[in-house]
Image 1 (cartoon, rainbow, N blue to C red):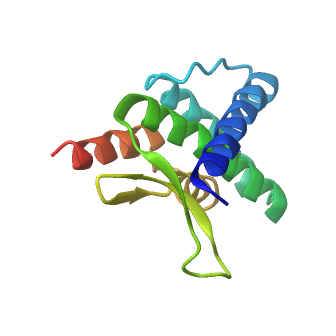
Image 2 (cartoon, rainbow, N blue to C red):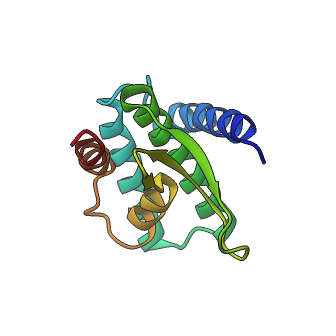
Length: 135
């Protein structure tokens, strides 16, 4: 998949996140840095649901990827960077944002917040990532 195809896919996935969050969580996302607080709220709700009854692997994959796409688009809009497909491990390819020789796997961060560690803040992760690349 070429860079422009990946970018288009991630932009579409981010729009899917906006629709999902509006429909299922009654929050309006606007691609601002402040909206990442809403993403954290949604991921916290998903984490709580996951603790009560596990989501299917397919749903976890989809939610992690659309939320990660949204976070990545917010990051790119505010700090720059581009989407990159990492296929070094054919069994576990992933898409991340690259900027200044750094890689930010936002979907992975979302997945870990849902499944393992609700104390993770996507908003804080983006702030830290921005600080790293702006040094």
